[in-house]
Image (cartoon, rainbow, N blue to C red; front, top):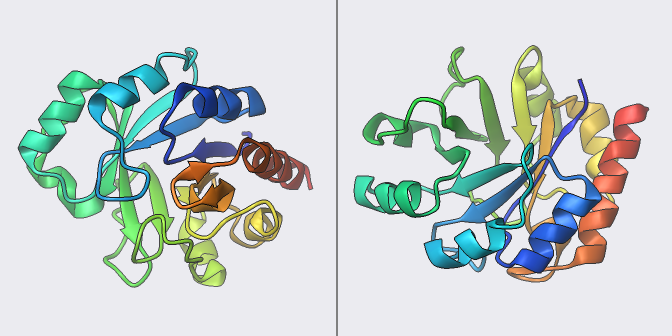
Length: 197
């Protein structure tokens, strides 16, 4: 099984194309307060270039039912990613993926979690989690490791945690919310090389 790589916080078609061309398995669009926040209309435009086989992920945090409905109907993502406790109040159609976010120091990871994201207390803040702790949580599970990853440390993170996938946002930016295509390519290249070790 090859390592799953998600590039998050994309806001325009050119950057999405760069991520897909570099080999991303998923691209994330942030519908939450953040320097990377996008409108539904902008996300639709940016995601129009995503080919079949690459997942379009709506990234939210504690959305209201109405906010989620707007994204679900207007954008129609393949996957909803939001904090684990949020799903109880949201109507996610059958066939749409659900990626609960579990945070370091937060609640226990449900055995039924399936694919899940593990990160620090604040999304997009560039904070790494404790990789040794993450390693004990990833065993036998489909963990996507997030938080503070970049091209310089992703190989070490993969070797330590052995996650199912990795997720990067601020680590491939030249400024908050501004993706750098070279850094995206370098990150994916480093992740793929580490996977082969």
